[in-house]
Image (tube, rainbow over all chains, first blue to last red; front, side):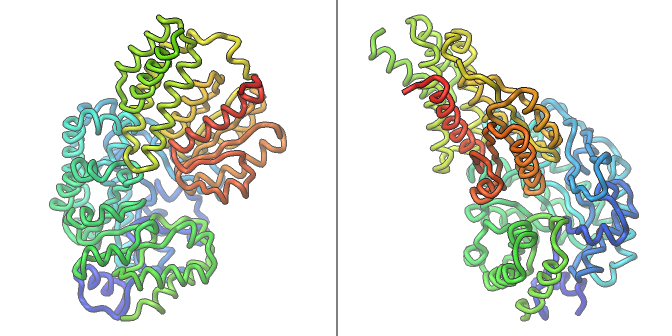
Length: 340
Length: 224
């Protein structure tokens, strides 16, 4: 059973030889960049470089997927935001692209362009996904991600204003989030039509560290449901932070699977959601993968598997500076502890 | 002035901040001036006391970030009225605060809240904004001969710029107090990097800033 077949079965809850070691988020490493002598900023802007970089964690470590892009600005750019790609930095500097200029002042200002497959860097991502399928698509699944509606709202308008209006003017924010959900469904299905094997929706802007569970239920969840009922499957909902009190709501969103980070107690999550839920998680991408020892990594992987994850996922993007020996130990630990 | 009246006004300023009721705060602030109350007293023991309670409500999980931001707006509503009336001799703090979000990070909510607390206490704040190159913190803190340098980062990847800035500042401006904050920052890293104060989130940063400000005011003014 190769990685592609394994992951496919995991998404349909079929019997597999072992859990998989993959992700729905960025996982390029410095070692991967070195392989092609790329600067980090280059791989956001060129389809071939993006595709090559996206395949390196599989090629170097046997990580079981290829995911592009690597930043969180694709959707915001299509909607009119301006990005900073830090192209002035040195080759060895890892600085993720950020939004330099927001797209809208007020929720009512949103205008979604026609033909989004041609807008911003969407063509770059689509071309990259095509190259990735040709390059490694027989062996590992190829995937991409979109933001959740609320996280995207925070990328295109002032975050402080969004947070306050969520409380004071929920009707206006609800209308904005519905429009963004429609846009995200369209974009997600463009990616599926281009041949991705699964899609991750990252609603990282709405963790319980920021918003109350009540607001999550009333303002965030309805629009996640709109997204998941509109996009093809398999789909994954990823939320960072302490998600223990909202895992039922995450599962209710209609995603094929949910992904949680290290603050989530996966054993409790499994107990709450039962056997039928597909749960991915929950390795700390910095504290464990970058800073941890091989032994730390092995015990974190074992704990996640013992806790009942269907596959081991890092809690966020794998941080490029992860040491080579840690990546090797990580993948090996999943193979060892994940046997079924 | 009647102590009971003073207490009543302070209570309303405080509650207005906690309940994010800007009108209540404005009314109480105006009344404070009308009855001749000391403006700094109203700010520190009314508005700031309210913000401290907001921090506790946040820690208890009763308030979340949107509520805290609205409380901050209520505090500013009072500050706009009271600040012009603070006696000059009450703000004897020399030097300045340099504050900003480190390069690669554009999350500035925490930074803005901490900035507010310094302004409340009468400090002059140089706000470098967000996505600030590391060298700029050092340059600006030297130019301003800053007493406090406050660095914020919301992401692990950008947090790692902090020890570099701390090292550079310590070398050239050893007396500056350095405050670091943001979700990925831990007590261990703060200690390891030699920061003078740290906080994992905006309201704890506010608390830390209040403590630091009170400490500095005490040093400078010989209060209490």
